[in-house]
Length: 344
Image 1 (spheres, rainbow, N blue to C red):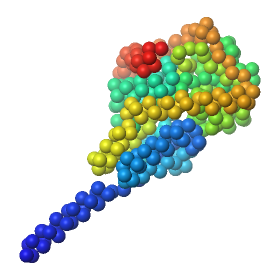
Image 2: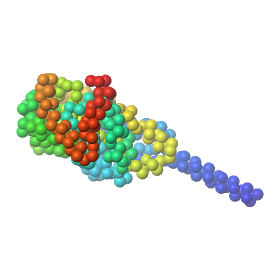
Image 3: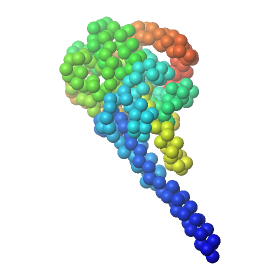
Image 4: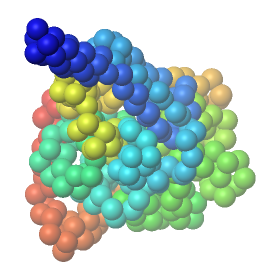
């Protein structure tokens, strides 16, 4: 009887331990640099968090901290995820120039189509070329914003020659190289610093997509906006939504499956679609403000593409000298984007 009771108690302990593991509650902290009302936090990060919580049966709780509330500057976000300071970050690898050179294939001049299509291509490109660059974290999504454009004070930009002498904010190494090649003086800075730089006259304008102009009130700080009549935008930026690797690996298998079900190409597509949909409010605010919106015609766009071509050549040469096949990466990036953009 004693042996029976001892065995029964041991069995009960095992069952209780198993139940405890199954009922394990996990809190994941997500950190990013945008205000909470911006399209990506509002329409992707928060809904993603709610979806993960629901699909985990409430066993995963996700806390979202916008606008660098947990400290640090935007360029530190990737390392915050890598080092376990936070669990998940949404960030721009280009804020640390040269660290993730493979991502720059998508940031080259006149590379992107709409964000939804280009973001699916970005995920496929990540799987083929970039897993080693991001080996220190567990990737959830890789995506881009919609085709970027110019937002400038004064008379604005209606032809290539109007770029001469302008001080323009650029987000990444390749975009600043592009602005310099087009005749402007490029000033690199993270997007949260840009409104103050505009208001104080540190810069004459900026390149960003329409979707972020609304939360940052850019239309109140500039007079003009210059877009391009082209099936490929002037530039885009490559983003990642990524998780601390040890934190992911520590999850029970069924909770890993929840994260996995909310990762990958479709999740990347989701963020891209949010970025595309976020453009319309930005355009509407600019129009309501009475700002001038220019769209450069195809013959003018051709001049810009010709002027920008050396940026692509220089990138291919640079990364090829460091063990990448730069030419193949550019060709694959273009082919993947064309695949998801319907060949356009």
